[in-house]
Length: 141
Image (cartoon, rainbow, N blue to C red; front, side):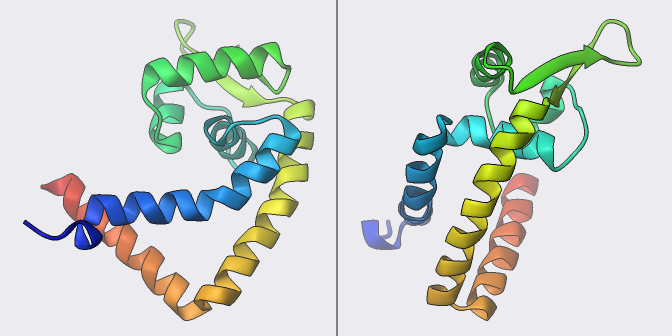
């Protein structure tokens, strides 16, 4: 067995927590959790979608997503809209949600830029390519 400092799952978690720290601070200021931000961001950068698609795109378990959707709807950041299939409903961002997205996306861009400056653009692109490749390999296994 590999030593703890060379264990992939732990290394990924450590990197995740370290990179999320400055985002959490900014999200706290605008009253969103990291998970809520993922939902707002996916909806702001895409089109209305159903809960199943949203859970997959946001990497959230369906029960967690249900609670998040309820909270974001109550806060007026998202709304449910009709689907072409009358049995289903889609979720879309509201104007208030878009305003939160715009405020945070500017801050996020600065955080990403700072991290990339420190880590290196080429290394960042390589890391993202490798992580996406690892995801594909692990998913196919």
